[in-house]
Length: 234
Image 1: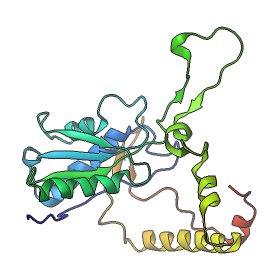
Image 2 (image 1 turned 90 degrees about the horizontal axis):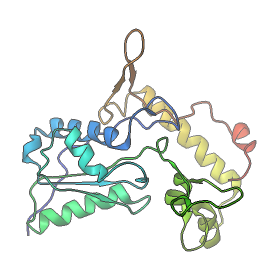
Image 3 (image 1 turned 90 degrees about the vertical axis):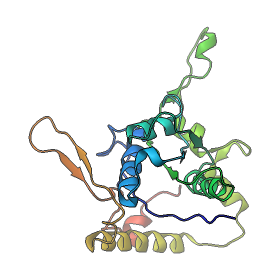
Image 4 (image 1 turned 45 degrees about the vertical axis):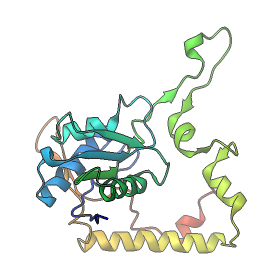
């Protein structure tokens, strides 16, 4: 049985909702990571046998976003590409499937990863195709409908987690972990520990030099127990 190995990896910075990366689709962000990973591995795009990309929020993103990302990264159109949706495990599952392909002898080189743009997820007008007759209607947020809403328990995933958890984790313990996580992430960014994995993204501006985004946007270095204590329970 053949072995499989991860030979290179790359990622974009993680942006905030409607943040600096808002103008890029998930496929565009994915293409940046794919292109950089290929360059780091010393692999030509024409050598790729298959592309597997995890993505949850695909509504309105066009046909086969993984193929869009692959093509934007220079991978030929005759290379197969598929999307995987396993919610939070989508990107990880793509790596698992790539391993299976290689070990089965179906491929030698597989691009596997994940991509997402919450900012570009649409609002959905369910029932609009049949025509609205009278009264108000509701727009569904695709982030909630396709990404965060449990289809089996009809509730947000966070509430479902609380419902089934067997652990007894206090609010204070959760806040302490959140504070330490932000502080450690901020320290790691300051020390340049993520520099090797992140590809800086250049964003053209109307005037002057382009904006370069090279760090994750969501890290709050000033997080304290007091600031967390003021937040309402999710």
